[in-house]
Length: 327
Image 1 (cartoon, rainbow, N blue to C red):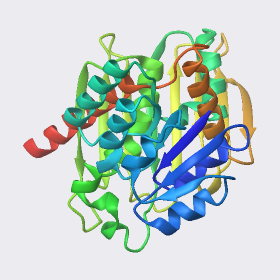
Image 2: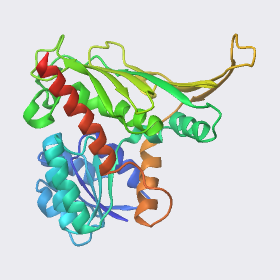
Image 3: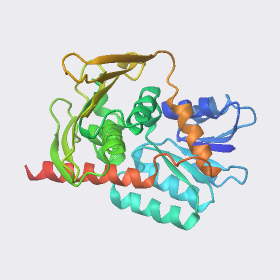
């Protein structure tokens, strides 16, 4: 498949590594030409541009990776769909439900596939956890408890994520949508949304912490906390069933070694039987995610996260933001 990449920062670089060498990059686009040139230089024959409009319409491009700041996610995706291209768009896919609705309309009209970059579903620990869950060994699920956060860096409150015009929201919209999506992946849709978002530390007009209590019609619950005042990077996701518990920790790198712990309750209860899988080394989620995208385009396998999943996450985020304004 032949790709264009719009947005040549860190995520654009990660995406390129999964595209090459099996596929090709035709054009890289970024407002900073030097960044586009650095990315294009890694792919034989690729060109660089500051104009994403031209890039997504390139006649030799089959699919577009949208790895821009949040304000451009929807416009670039819509333009790519109107040009007849398949799309991988980074989460949250839009700054708001209103923007996302326009993307959904364009996708329905084009008939092209849109994959939303909830790449955490493709981490090996989560792939294994999903396998165990689908096998029924956990028994009926009761609740999920998850924490995800980082500590920012000097000047973080002056970067684009701190500007609501560019980002659409703060930490809840940034990292929070990942754990919302993962919780929904296991528990299904949430019909009761409670919680709030607040700015405790950073000097910025968007939230640095989000606290959520989400419930399904069966009263299964997800208790989630997303934070950029964590100081030491943290990822912890616990899935509680009546028969067993799964705990995913770390995402590699500064988050620590990725690990899945499986705690199976004994008939006599007491200390559980414990199995632990560790996944050291590079983050393979991006490559597995591209494989899922390609399989869906080819009509094989089950579709990965898409616009409906982005909509479900944004509905929760917007409800929490509304709750917070009422406090």
